[in-house]
Length: 282
Ligand code: ATP
Image (cartoon, rainbow, N blue to C red; front, side):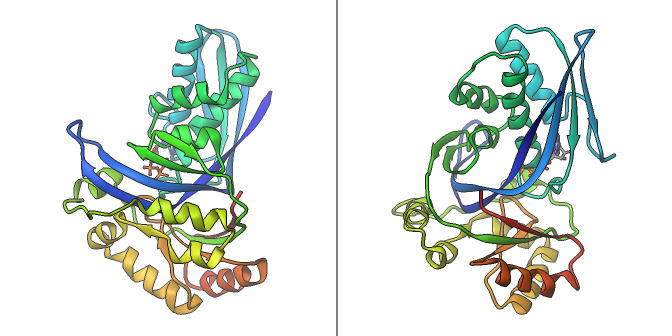
């Protein structure tokens, strides 16, 4: 039995540039993994099947689970037909804009490469991940990266910036497809938001990093789901700090320079928000 951690991501920038002829949006975003994670257990079984189990009842356990899809792609690409049981211990909130399903798929690809000693490079695994989902390649690498195209083209960024992060998942169900579908106007920029963000991160400048966080999907999501805007305003009131949305939401977050400040935010929020998480960049 082998265990692999699947770390969640937050978006530090997310530019939506235009709608492509294939229906996807061309995006440019900085993603950062945080230490909120699922634990994925992998074990060979006889019979050649793919069996997914989880500690939570609301995940699909068939082909619709991204861990299943990743296993199928891995077996197709390597020609391996051995069966596998995958247990997903879920901690990352689901459908939250934190890439939970994609992180599980990425961890499955890394884990199967170890379990079956296939010796594939991380680049190979990331390439496989692109056919499972746009965020999977970045989550195969982890850390920090600029993702472009549909999000599947990844340039890794090494930086020294350390941050604590307090996350709140508002109790509203959002549809990623509806949010992208409602994206009608696109900003013209001289350069992508990721450029200045990467510079700030490389300088280890947390204040500048926080000041540069942006997400083109925030106004769209807040228009479709006013609960997100209400929660963001309440959070900004109690923390007296700017609060941002990750991905297509609804998870909101703010950064803190140290554990003491992070705990202060956490305690202030914990009174009225149900799902609050304290985490760190990793
Ligand atoms: P995205 O921004 O890519 O939509 P997300 O972080 O908002 O991702 P996920 O937690 O990945 O959302 O879940 C999105 C959907 O994917 C859910 O409806 C869920 O049922 C499905 N799903 C499939 N496999 C998984 C998995 N292993 N973990 C979580 N959700 C999964």
